[in-house]
Length: 252
Image (cartoon, rainbow, N blue to C red; front, side, top):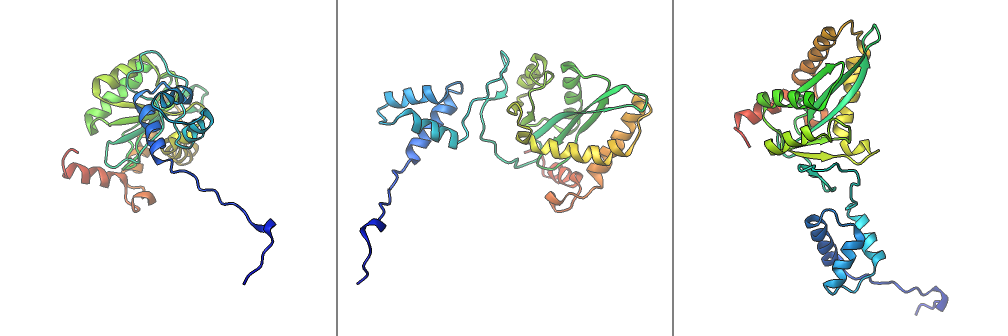
């Protein structure tokens, strides 16, 4: 017989199963996207859940349901909450951003970069002296005519991306704009990784003597990236191989 001091005994609590509660919180958050945890708590109490606000807040945070505060008026095609799934096919999810550089003579450049997160194919790397919202729409319309429209595009909170023009274009084309949280570049990790490769292999490797020179060199790099460069994430194949395979099987 084993003897033990009473002081060594410890109570092991048995937490209640919270699966049903989590599911209900998620359902409310998905249907009432502007409700924070306080309003969700009120609705739960109305439904008869005996639960305090602190518990709702803890579960709300655990499930990553925090509201994205910054949202312009009439952002119809914005995805307002977390819950991203990995892309499952070509043109499922694109990522888009700007990279900054300059000519050898000093003038600043803004370079719009776009990448398909499934195939790693880049449909556009476009340098210009300045970009406004209509310019972004023009580039997207041009490349979508070539490779098809994405289901969603991940972007940050830049003025061109939260614009009325881009939101209207997305609404008309059935594209969802998935906005990163302010100050969270990891929300759009695919484009950050792409931009790092672009800077190391192209921007840092060349001087741009003129805008036309920048356009030629960026386009040459984009073609090499798509058609030659092996990518470990897709079995060391070039992105064009996944695009061609998708085209061979027809539209999704």
